[in-house]
Length: 213
Image 1 (spheres, helix red, strand yellow):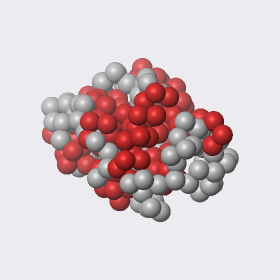
Image 2: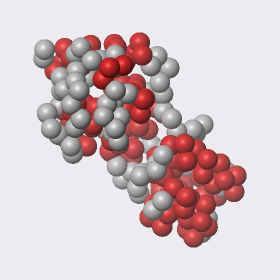
Image 3: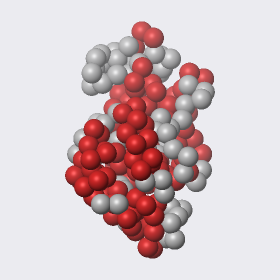
Image 4: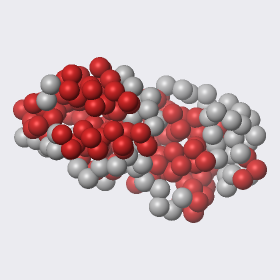
């Protein structure tokens, strides 16, 4: 089975399995998703969703967060780990949004990449979830699963995985596909145990079924 054919089959199976899958970070404004995705590095989305409640209670908008002392931000976000670097990036990012973009998150991939603490994964998440643009978010679940499924061949570098997936995933499907990979990666195709291939909706088309990689 060719990679593109396998990809289309996987997309349809995951749609049926996780019809309502979406971003597991809570947000109601674009800038809040920027903050949350930075905090989510090496931290669970569930913990981030709790921590940001306190952050937004004290700093409810871009202006107040941009004006906040970095040490004060760090004190709040410390439970997410890497507190110093995350607080520094969040502060610098909010300042840049306020000073250069009129308090708005830019709807441009390259502009997003220029924001402090924003890499390709974060920029793709914003483009897909906030602006509804084609996006492929290569987080750890995505990288692990697409390798196991045979959609990419032993590629671990996020950007290279992203480029490979653009060739076989229809643009309109990319964002939702990656969200569904997160759900599937947490529940079935797990990282810390052997994947539960016996209950996987993809078992008959997965290239590496039963192999713990």
